[in-house]
Image 1 (cartoon, rainbow, N blue to C red):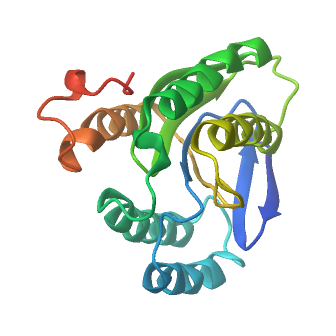
Image 2: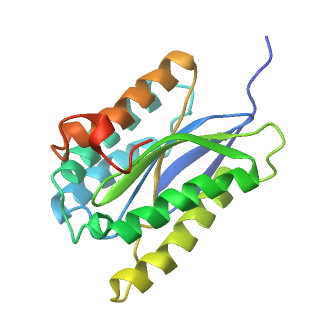
Image 3: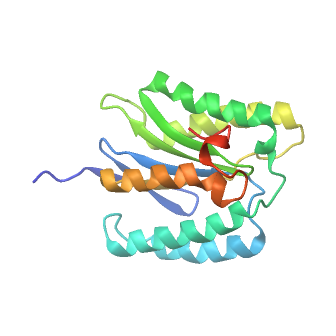
Length: 198
């Protein structure tokens, strides 16, 4: 049995894992999307994740806890919700689709008022790391959103959440999550009614 090559890296406090030929579920949120109480809770989970291996059950459980806390607040619609502006949401959608230039497929995503989720599948010959991919999308969209919305300061939270997808069952679970997120957040009655879900 061949071992999967993994590389650990850090941006800020949250550990991330890059996996050879890996597929990822990612969540990126606007800088003002979480209230102070949520940030405090998430910092406790950050501390616990720092010394745990990515393939351990503990890591998976803590990631799930982190994601559950984050989603509770994100779906409540905290912050200025800059992605409710159609040009901003359109820009994020276009940038995700442009990742094909880097041999990264993004077959599913949803753009919510203060965050977005996507499934990323870098191709076998994609020369870019997950960190580089995220830097490209966040950097290009931040500039465009600032032009659209005005104001100053960071657009995106420095950190992002990513989950290495272990198998096809997990992939399908995240597809369903992405499709149902606008319904769960009561933005629409049916997934197909949300213009920024693919």
